[in-house]
Image (cartoon, rainbow, N blue to C red):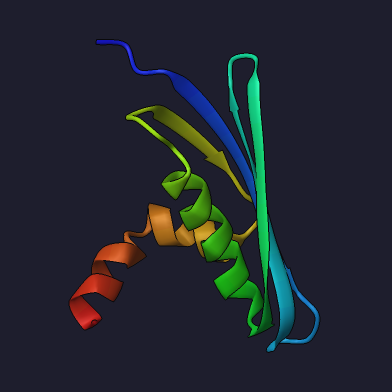
Length: 91
């Protein structure tokens, strides 16, 4: 079974850290494109980077092959160094 290929670009930012922040993602599947975004009145840059990725993955409606692009070392390390598993074990 071939899964659809989805490319996701994410970003998050914050004015001050903490401070007001926002996140955005673009999901691309063939000719289809979806843009999503949001904001928080009091947050951190890292939280917005993570939120962009989580919201993008939550927006997928069916199983896909995903390539996610981010400029956030924090987000990239979370995937590459299995921080998610550590976070889940730590509560």
